[in-house]
Image (cartoon, rainbow, N blue to C red; front, side, top):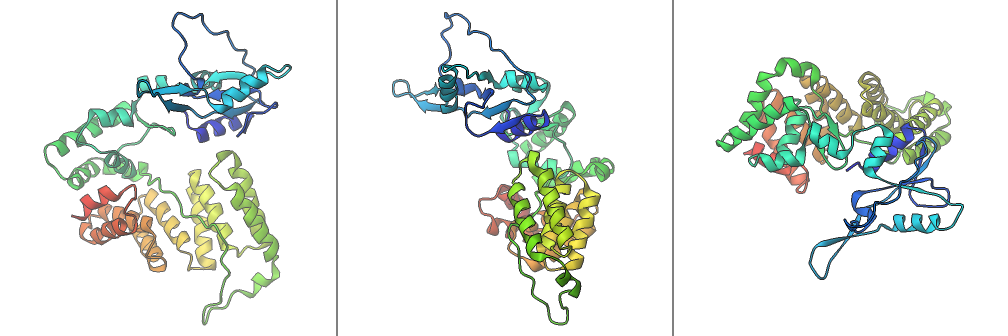
Length: 384
């Protein structure tokens, strides 16, 4: 299933606009497979064809699939989504006309593979989990973080792998089934492809983001630079707040957010929060050199923002510079010892440096700080 975020980004790239609600301005409604309501009677005639205007410029509203339990059979019964009902009501009132299409039709119009085509061409995570019973999902995700395997595609619903990764996944499953510890399996896999990983490794960590501004307080013996007083800090903070509102994970608004962060920095080059969040945008685009320069600039202005050290550690880790990454993560922990992800990524780094003994306290700290975290089961295995 194509995720809502992915669909919005796709429409934006094609020159269209998206909306949360169906209105008279909507020209196309994309409905998930279950949002169309009850399946048609097989004996009924085929539904009439839908006219499909070019997608760029269209206002597309993305509907949710809904289902309700059946009191008679105890099985889910598909129910029309509220957005589909609203679109049908508007279509009954000329001159309104909203094209109602399925997810597969939308994919074909946009020129991307349908979910069924992806399943035929690649191997979906959920199918691999059903096939290889000794593997857990977090095992596979850890192999991705270590660079041993590389997903060919991610959607909201699943992660897809190409055929070459299947051999690694099968080998891992077989060794686990024979009683091997996951840690030893990972070490063997890393050793067998270390040369390639020096170039291909990608941590894929989410950078720490600054959500609110912190007022700077002069440290003893280290006053705030006098030059900062020459800048319009109030206006810079207003641009920062605007940028933060736009910086919500929607790819179609990232460039606008970046522009607002840059405007804030023109007004106050010492606004560290803007430096860090702008660096995060570059990081999300794999523009690592630009991101690294901004994180280092932020640390040079104020060295006590743990976000800058943590994120800089991610970049060093991405580049295979594990000793430098270790130093950054350790400094981030000195500033904020309660950020669970820092313990996790430092533990991963130490494992990569073959320092499992030093990694164990951080695996345990991650368990304590994030008892419901996505890596907690893996942390238990590595901390034993």
